[in-house]
Length: 283
Image (tube, rainbow, N blue to C red; front, side, top):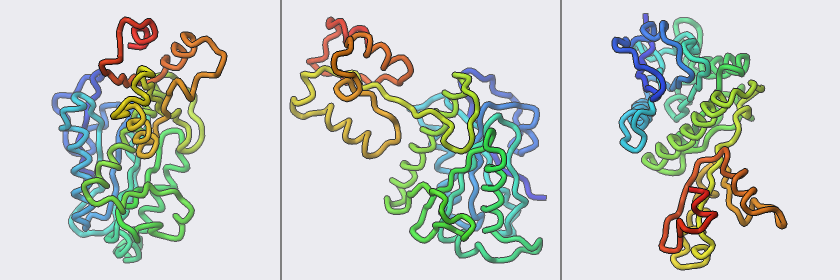
């Protein structure tokens, strides 16, 4: 019987089991707030390498120590046939990431001994997530130009477009978008929001840009460069005083409201003074 390979990551506020098996059954006694299920055609070395890269990016990156999330991979018994569609039940929320590439498309219509195809497998995973939208989120990723939509039954579904960036940048892009989604899910859980329907139920991640106006037009214009980059490359909502404070409103109150539920990004330069009341209050 094929088993679902998994790795696991650990949040700093959750005790890590000492003898956690690498088999799916080893996680059944542990309840997680969140886990990721990475699905792909098991005969694709490129997709397999990407899945492993994502695992190590979250697990081994020194920039995010201690941020670990359970991760399952597509079951692989070596026969290259689609397994039985399965959504993990060991977490409150499961994020199913489908890595779609040319290998998946090329083998999407090959009928297995059980009478199913890889296209059926992808469609069924999506259907299960759609039917369980309060506990499952489906994230299809287009790794190659011709991977969309895999099957006509998935036409009209928004795929994360990552095929035109090159392998290295593509993986980084997927990791950033996935990180953003996972943070939004955890923030929602922490805030105790009621579950809504579909993938748009998670409030956007907001970043508060703390800066001094002296640096906005001052060369090398790092504030503008950062804003342009974040707005172009990232899905986060950026809170920036000149665009988010209503004219005529109390500046201090607006800053306090803006920073209350955001991540703080402070641009520290020679002009940034901690002796200024507004700067001191932000940091």
